[in-house]
Amino acid sequence: MIKSMTNEYAAKSLVPEGFVPNKALGQNFLASESVIGAILDAAQIDGKRVLEVGPGTGALTEGLLLRASFLAAVEKDGRLCDYLAAKFGDRLSLLHADVLDADLPLLMGTEPWHAVGNLPYYATTPIMLRLVSLLPASMTLMVQREAADRFFAGPKDRVYGPVAVMTACFYDAEVVVRAPRGCFSPPPEVDSVVVRLARNSTQASDASAFLNWVRQAFSMRRKTLCNNLQRNPKLPDVLETLRQPADVRAEALPPETLLWIYERLHD
Ligand code: SAM
Image (cartoon, rainbow, N blue to C red; front, side):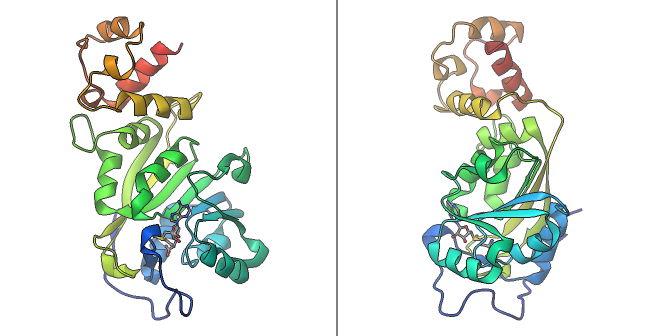
């Protein structure tokens, strides 16, 4: 069931005194206790190992700490890292880094882990792709409404691409919370939703290698799959087995077909 939130603000400000948000880092902080509660409930992370992406001023962090067995967080803004370190001390494994470059496997270890975050709008797609390449057990991600379309797109949709392919191949995804712009401080220009992605049973020997291949397959949207894959010599036979034309484009093929082609090319 999708929870739709109202424009209700929390009574207390979640932003530290005198702090000026950095727009370039997508700093729209959650300011609604009911949305924060809904995200924490949707995440289902009680007793689990959790990575929080972009903790900001800690709106979600407090609740995550109460529920998770281990919480790591990666924050790019050094001012917020100082604030969070003072607020949470060693309860939180905090890394001052860009989540796109951070050594997440080292931070999270080999046990299954779950990702949670209210993602900065300017980097939603790269952050989602970074996370999915590591196949966390679940991801509960707040994104701006338009960005959410990328998770659910299908062949021929304008925004069909690597995010939709990785989501459909490896996760069951649903929108679990809707939050209007008034739930944030400062308010962003569009409304947001929370997408919860739970790992499905599809095996992946190397999701990161598959993602790189999918990126290549979609790299030039007007080019055929054959041309984007630099005329892989095995591809014509694989396409023929599928009764697909030799000049088919990646955008015309469903996610599971792309995964099937990848596996045939790499077995
Ligand atoms: N979680 C907080 C909340 O809900 O109020 C903050 C969310 S705010 C939309 C996004 C946060 O991600 C900001 O704190 C921002 O500094 C941080 N951030 C932006 N780009 C980042 C990156 N590449 N790596 C890590 N953190 C980043």
